Amino acid sequence: MFYNTLHNRWLRLVACVVGELIAAAALNLFIVPLGLYTGGLLGFCQLIRTLLQSMGLRFGTYDIAGILYFLVNIPILLLAYKRLGKGLVIKTAICTVSYSLFYSVIPIPSAPVVDDYLTACLLGGILAGAGSGIVLTCGGSGGGLDIVGLCLSKQGSSFTVGRISMAFNIFLYSACLLLFSPEVAIYSVIYNFFTSTVLDRMHQQNVTVQALIFTREDEDVLAHFIIDQLGRSVTYWNGVGAYTKDDIHVLCVCLSKYEIEELLHAVHSIDPHAFLTVQEGVRIAGNFPRRLE
Image (cartoon, rainbow, N blue to C red):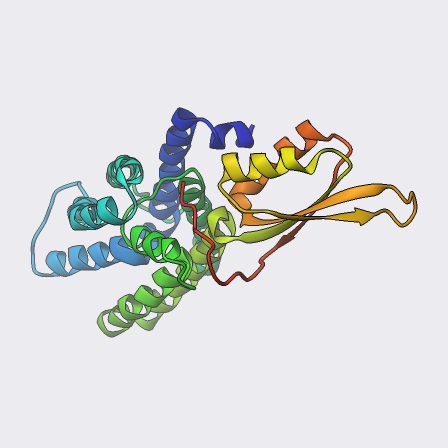
């Protein structure tokens, strides 16, 4: 079912909105009631909101941090339009509006849902990271530092989305440490660590894999599928089965984990008896374009 969702444009968009709902709900239900701060640009907007409130400014029942987050994303979306293309920008705009809306309308409990800070950070981080990971895996983005991370990933940088977020958050939480109590900064860091860890695991485009395919069928059919449909290059050679002494063809291809499901479906469709191994976390240097959608 998840495979079909990934390859249907409208289902991907729906999944992106649902992912933003999960992330916003996790933040408002577990983190905000404890007076903690999320990371990235939204955390920065929360910090600005708190400073404005300390100056006596009031904004009624609305959380102005969501509005500020949308406004600061406008120049980032313009950058994404040049670097990442129109399709991603449209989905990012939809996701950003959805996230800002959900963040503003989901009621914040007057009392924390979970009193224990560490448990709340764990639950909130897992849910928020999973929600954001769904968005990225389905080809969208919640805006903010996600866009910066995607641009770096597109250029082949070693910085993943999670890593660039953590680098920015060093400065953000240092400010929290100076302005608030140490507990606020420490538990906010813990929450962000859980979020970033789950996010990087969910964001399958960041995971590079190597697949070895062993087949007795015509290797050209699989090779043409990999080249034409996946846009990846492939190397193949002839081998001999040590037990059966039969001639086999071995194909080697490197691709992202996001693309491996499509390859698996094609392999088993072309040759149901094919043998395939997948190795995750392969380090690749050279001409290997990153796919974001």
